[in-house]
Amino acid sequence: MTKGRARWLLLGPAGLWYAALLVLPLAVVLVYSLGERAPAGGYAPALTLAQYANLGSRWAAFQNTLLLAPAGTLAALLIAYPLAYFLAVRANPRWRTLLLVLVIVPFWTSILIRSYAWIFLLGGRGIPALLSDLGLGDIRLINTPFAVLVGIVYGYLPLMVFPIYVSLEKLDKRLLEASSDLGAAPWRSFLQVTLPLSLPGVATGSMLVFILLMGEYLIPQMLGGGKVFFVGNALVDLFLQSRNWAFGSAMAVTLVAIMLVTVTLYMRFLRRIGAARDDTGLM
Amino acid sequence: MRIYALAVYVFLYLPIGIIALFSFSAGRSASQMQGFSTGWYAKALSNPFVTDALKTSATVALISAILASIFGTMAALALSGMKGRIRVLFDALIYIAVMIPGIVIGIATLIALVTVFDAVNPSLEAVTGWRLSMGRGSLIAAHVLFTMSLVIIIVRARIEGMDRALIEASNDLGAGPVATFWQVTLPMLAPAILAGFLLSFTFSFDDFIIAFFVAGSETTLPIYIFSSIRRGVTPEINAIGTMVMGVSLALLVIAQLTLRRGKAPGQ
Image 1 (cartoon, chains in turn purple, brown):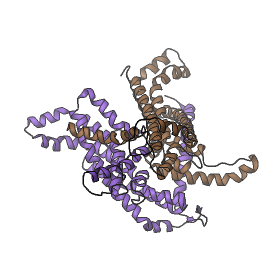
Image 2 (cartoon, one colour):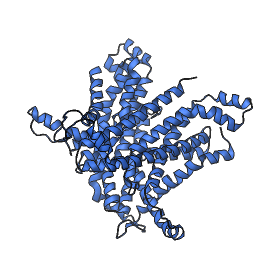
Image 3 (tube, one colour):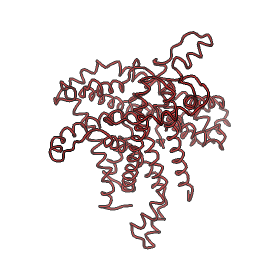
Image 4 (tube, chains in turn orange, yellow):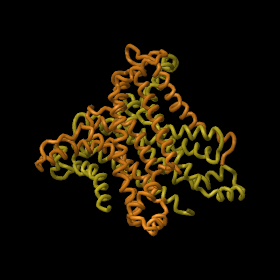
């Protein structure tokens, strides 16, 4: 559409932004991760792997993240799939768009407010009070891994439903008719036709949710009350409280590395089982 | 199946519904509905901390959405139909900018800018008397990185779905590239640009984690809400939270409507 010099002028601001606010900062993090903590906090130049060797001291944060991020992804998937199936296959086409929009809308409102809503519901005078009125005794919900899991599912459910819906919606209904004409029971048609064909959506949704969960800070902070600690919480502590930039950088680099490796392995796995036939767009 | 779907919708809307409902409580308790009043809204809007934070958030969101829309549209125009290494490079950068966790972007921007500022401030101060520090500028810059990438994705999708024949017709009829751009291309892209602008505004207005790192001494509305929640749940937070959700919802509805209106003719 545009040629030569005009194209460079058009790309200029974006290029500048990516260079100064993406490439440079990420490079700084990489360099700082090889440095040391300055006595007064901040960064002191060095070339050492000491920070990486020390990662074990924050092992609990990695453990929680690597346990709860996949668990949250799986929980979101299990809740999202039937809904996506309902929207794509069973719902009245007249209402379909509206119902889909209603799923996505909460995702675009502040995650802070949505997590806050659960402090409200899971806190002492919310659901626990209701349960004890029913004679179920004192059950503590807030500041537990369960509360964090609820917050995760609540926060990221829309992101899981949408890609699964897209892949189910594209599914050729004649395949299901053929399957049932050939005598397959409905559940067998589902397992052998619908489910395999919807795997690309499952893969996209799971990956999006998993990636976002790896960097999560707000949900464990607000619903885990400092007891359920993610890598994100450790990063806030290291950069904003103890000001240990070198160690924090090493932790951030490790987090991104774990993400990249997991995503790559996952993609490879999907390609092997033949699911990644196409990529389902997010928007 | 239908009951299951209904249950999920209740799960999605009950919590935010309760916040909205309790924000109209007349009582002082955050978890008991006592009468009906809009008193907490009046109280929130007369709290100078809230109004200052609201002004900061709105200013940052507006400026970053404007910059993101302009720079993003420019880049999308340049990248459409482009091939080769530059295209691959930009695709990778857009992908990284969207996928990398916000917390990593926040940290990286914080330490990179602080390092640069510490390096240039002594000489800058000697010459001009000014010094650079973290604040609105760094917050806008960090938000534009993400929102500009969002605009590029949305506008590029629109360019790819656009009828090229119209542009060729305009050229054949003797319009120069500038006239074609203003009279044909831009009007066709307008809905996508507007949708990108509104989504950018919403993102910036709602963002907590990036602002937490790079806002310096500035307090945005999400930062204010976060620190108030630490001090305890109050009906005033319910009212502020409901207002914030209201703003996002209104912008989202407008964005959806403009995107849909833009798609209607000729597709």
